[in-house]
Image (cartoon, rainbow, N blue to C red; front, top):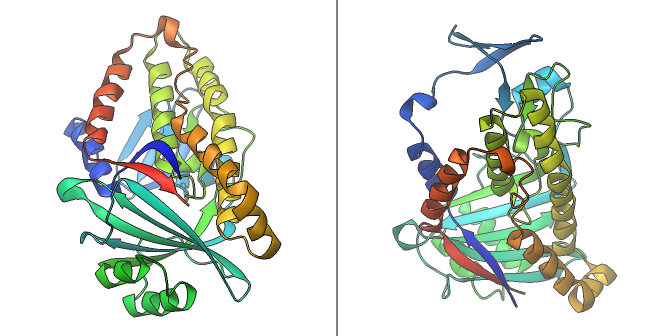
Length: 332
């Protein structure tokens, strides 16, 4: 086992904190973006409801299926990683120790499976989670509403790991079960559009497999970095976008690569599984610990001239997020 200095929260609870931290006027619902026109001095947005807006900069943080990325940067599509995840969620507490995440590896009929049970959130926001990681030749959808009937998960669990200490309880207590294909974004030479009026952020720039738990983290790190730069009136916008890209791109792409590697270790079989069990598992945990423990925003090349107002906002936000998180250590 190895302690990872991490905490986990439910996505809906994190979203609520983020929404509550912003003025209501910042969020516009019912605005589906249907057209982007980029000029040399501004970018124009057109929405399905007929409204239009102009801005000096469009920050495209619209996810792995980003409309802005497709429209401005070209028609590349998310790439299927070859992994599939079954995910059960329960507000009933079937795990004895919410502070420890357990990883088990199984091999059945020549196929490798990773089984992870963990707790997200705490108190009334606590949910216990069971995740089964496998390889798949079928390109399963990544839609958030792609659910699996409970009976199918029960059959699968009985076939793969009938002796697992909590899998049976997880299936019995599950309130919703998901079946997701895992995709990532192909890397791009730049996150900045040719005219410099659109920039990518979060999954629109670097969607990753979830096996290191860094997707939402990287998006918030992106936002912190870009926000600090744009708030600095002494940095020209185009210079700031390049500074943002230099500060974030290589790091994020490295995490994407490592996450796929961890997925491969979870689903190894045969000789590769033996190698993992005897030699590579500690290397995997050390890699995850290093990523989780590293603050990629610690190096702030813009800090000398920064007004620091945005930093205080993120510090306050971080304290709120800690309040709903469950601490975690990993045991394999």
